[in-house]
Amino acid sequence: MPIVVNGVELTDSEIEQALPDYQDSINPVHEATTAWVLQRVLLDEAAHQSLSLDEPEAAIEALLQQQVKVPEADAESCRRHYEQHPARFTVGEIVEADHILFQVTPDVKLDALTALAESVLSEVLADPACFTGKARALSNCSSGQLGGNLGQLSRGESVPEFERVVFAMAEGETLNRLLQTRFGLHIVRVVHKEPGRLLPFSAVEAQIAGVLHAASLDAATRQYLKRLVGEASISGFDLKGTDSPLVQ
Image 1 (cartoon, rainbow, N blue to C red):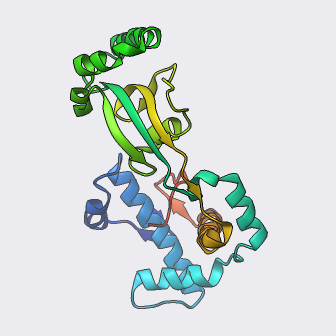
Image 2 (tube, rainbow, N blue to C red):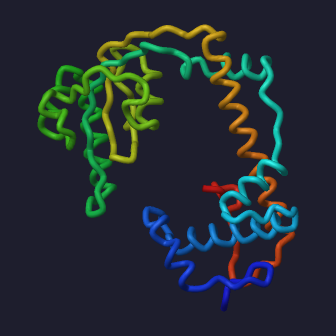
């Protein structure tokens, strides 16, 4: 069944031309098709608004600038964001951490790996002195040769799911559960911690205002796209997930 948007049919050559831009996606064809459908909807609306420019990207940009407007973030909103997220504005915060990684790979039996990791965690919690030896013997990370030591970590130097937990731990603490990340299962302990310094609000207010404005603009753009998609005539394609990033 052909894919048609407002009377315009998507051709195979258009999809083939767009595919290279989406090769890293889970479903490149679906992503490329979604992008074409949304572009078509936006271009039709741009034409309706008499914004038919030579370059499609320019027409879409002009349309969004005309139709999607949000106010700048006020000082109160910026101050509230600052107070709710102090870690984002703290500099010089450092943790020295050790870990034992049980790597999850496509061919690994997850139940068996988890059982092994849980068993080692129990041993480490009962006898902290065995951590280094266990890391050398079992860790799937190169840090295992150093007894699991990752050295000093600043924010932004590790994956978010690891960072969130490690920076929330106390100095000398061994996490009493396995920490799961995209790499696998970790046994983690924090050896040393430097608290860092909170930047004054005046130093980051402009930055916060920019972030809040960008977030508001993104949300307003999504809502605008939802409305246009709802008003368009689309057949042959189920445009789901309109809460996902729709404008590249």
